[in-house]
Image (cartoon, rainbow over all chains, first blue to last red; front, side, top):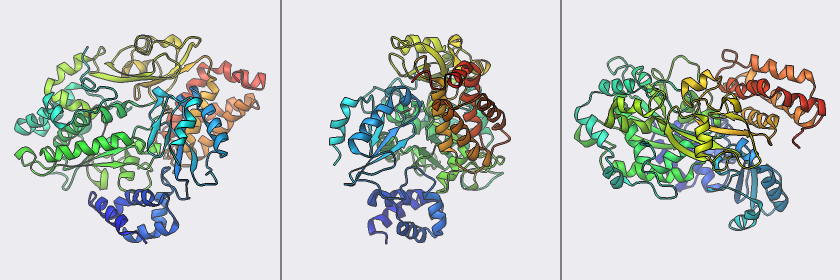
Length: 154
Length: 424
Ligand code: SF4
Ligand code: FES
């Protein structure tokens, strides 16, 4: 079931478009914002809220990289693996984080604290290598900066 | 040197709020057009300015606007969309404008909307620009409360609503018809053209999609005219351009310079030249989907016609540098991996072809490639071309590959002969 808050927020978004269905991506983002990820149940709820079929909503949800159809950790680390960050050495940043947390790309730590995901260019190329943790950008990365950076996310 | 677009942007400081923006002459353009310019006057002025789209394709903005049918011919809502999706690897220019001067974009959007008589406008922005999201939302609210947006703008009888939509992340949404599907809440796959968005775009209605940098120009052109605009460039194409450099240069960054500034000036005078111990080997001039230029072409002017004549495209104007200590095969492999991942999957040549190319490049990196693999790569550069694929995604991916094979053939061969990557 969608919470009151989720329904209200979705309703607000539907007002910005000529018909409710057009707010599908916004609705998915709203649910993910509250729950961290989008379950099958949430797909069904959004479908009935927007008068769509479940498959249609799932088709949309599965297309976009920043919509998670599987549970993720409390904090999501997105490491840029595009070319400017490659030149400037994202691989060593990845290796360090991966070793420190004991997870590879696509995995979540067993305590649910971090999920590690590769990501395309973050628009920080002039300060490469770059990554994001949740909504925060970090750039000009070097291995020395990583421990204290991760500390902020529990 | 004039830098109209970035004059009021101070790095690491909050952007101008509405009052401050007005003090610099902001929103005078909106007042001027609502008082005494007809939509066709505006389109005419933008046409004579020759403002070429800054998103990559370089289509003339005034011409694009003029393709929107008149109200008497097509009824119903028409739309303006600012393309702020900016997901091209190596590109970070629109972010600077979104974070640095939001009202400049909003004013440009109001004028553009009026010119095509749109009553609804959206900013379609990439999800990663979290800071810009907050800044743009605040600026839209300010513009509403000052009466620049909403019903009966400044008592003119003209109505315009403007909303921000943040995407959920896919490169292909920067392609304008895929963007429209995404904005309609669907999977972001491209649409067949024709019909073009000008006649049948968002929700099937006439729509214009312009890049952020393009729209940010509009208030300045209204204020200063088309002659002024054309004289800003050194090449006659008009205006300045946001140029960026990333890679092994001393000072990677972004600069607003006359359109037509040479690659040499940008790299040597602004980006501080190559880092010590590194040599320039190649340049991707305008985002991942543009052909390589090589060091001997460094005196090429960075304008649409000159870069085309040199065998590539100006694209977004934010260049990536290939240095002599980076393996060109690894560089290209990284680009292709990106394109393979970001294929929307709608048409077979791209969905199947790009992962194949990616695998073959992997063989080079692992030292298992043979001469036959060069042929396979070359075959794809000739096969994944416009007409064989549904949109420009796969052909775009082939640009750095085909020019890479041409300029760095020896490096590909070394991987075969030495049976490993010589850079590792
Ligand atoms: S070329 Fe690629 S991105 Fe374009 S429609 Fe085909 S599969 Fe989709
Ligand atoms: S390539 Fe990593 S931020 Fe652009």
